[in-house]
Image (cartoon, rainbow, N blue to C red):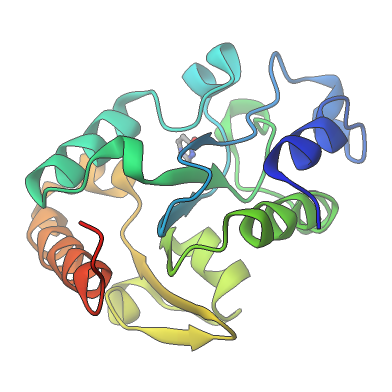
Length: 187
Ligand code: URA
């Protein structure tokens, strides 16, 4: 069984798709390698490409606020993306880029074995939960996929564009915290 360090080493110099040629840094993932809660976004943006760390830009700062609001310490969670490299001008990932990259995420998930996986936004939910996932209708719904409990919430960048969605996000995050604490002696 590959450890998280093994998986990181395996993708460090990845050139499986064209994004390998344009990245500044590969953005592997950040957080607790034994997290019970894992978030999966779409792809690195500019700040993430520059730093090599996921969700450090404006969207990430908003995610931090929601985590704080529901009393989930950021250092308890693990955060990664479907793609490990930034698409030019933050365009949506291409299917062939997702196909090339998704194996790394699967290995990451297997190494961490979280209880709950939360997709951040439509692109992640369509890839990890079901291809026809509708984020407006289905955010906050729960899906048992193998050993993982999965849900999706609005992407924080969508909340920046439309702050009216923040109320729904808050409700979804409260429920995530509740499920995380369910049947657990860890806080
Ligand atoms: N948006 C994402 O989906 N992922 C990041 O890491 C940053 C912004």
